[in-house]
Image: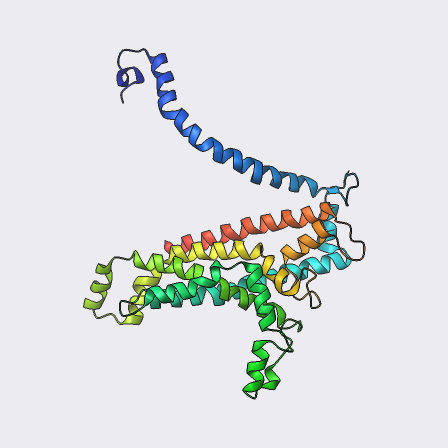
Length: 321
């Protein structure tokens, strides 16, 4: 290997190191430093501050008192607060499960159809599928809230006209169905995202692989099972991770369709709405934000996200091998 003095003629080793540092290292530092500063100010510092705050008792504008793990003990084990937290956690996992099953499977089916060489008008169908994802979540939520209105909403009117009055429900007022309905509305809006990601992955598969499979006598189902799905498995892992992260941070769709109080009977309460109600708005009847307890909810959610992402990455990697 050539020394720095040999690579930069006419200067000694010390001077060569300085010139190499200026030419090779400083530009990269200049490129990375702005992103690092932005990440530190807007991500790392708030995160560390939230973790620190979770160890303090802090309500409203009152001073803070170090309480150790008391906020976590209250959150997990004590009274109604623990009941609300475990309920919101279960609802969040259910919300994520619906998206994984409905949104991502439909996205994969749509992508397979749109990638078919016999599909005409694929551009029009792509636009139709993706249009809901371009709408504001609050607008979509309020529109669906009107559509699902039990008195004059379009869904119940259609069911009544079809003679299915027994199926007409107060969709957002029934504890057993409200969260499922909201999850399906959210899946409808965002199905275009996994569709486009899966479609992009399918279009990168070389056509020669399909021709070889057809020459070997493989059927359409065998091509799907042994060629397409294995090759887009890493993309499935990416979509699963994005779905997990986005749904564990869900707030706006529930806010627009069921408000932040978890109505009816906390059946639509997610971790995002619980955090807002505890740490920002303040819970009824006191109405004073408990910043320490809210920070504990945020901290636990953050570590759940890390654990979930790592688990999905490991499962995807093991299947690739």
